[in-house]
Length: 212
Image (cartoon, rainbow, N blue to C red):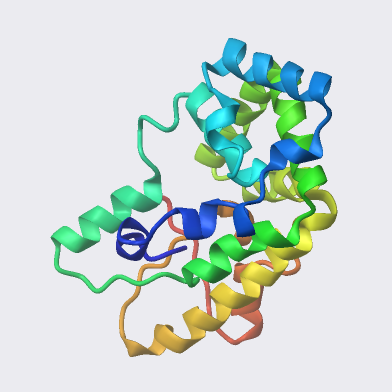
């Protein structure tokens, strides 16, 4: 979805951190904050104080990936990017970094904190959900991945899915006729009434499913 080379040379604070030195810890009362801190340390070995400037939604994603052992494997997008670079292929992102991470600023911090709190209250349930999601993904069940993501995002699906689908679709249209291309994105962006597959079909492209 993004230019991996660009993110590697960019100060992560520009996108991962809340603006103007804001801290999400300021949104919580003392007892609730302490409880959240203890749960993170006990269940995941994470010191939340060291990440109080990071968007809570991004922090929840990073913690869950660590807890599920996914952060050690590296993302599929990174591996594909590395292979393409090794072959001397041109690589680009379907979104600008500001577009990809800019959606975090559009989601109310308290709602992001609700996601973080739910993860830390029920870490075992969260892990089970992730492993089930992975199994569905590996089975090619895009409908399940899309519905799960849509339900999880709630009212923020507009920013996190639909608006980003439009951005990626426009980038595809700008590049698809230049020659053979291999596009990748999160599976939840493919399915649904506003998904990339339907957008491409409506634009007149013929799609064929391949099992790799």
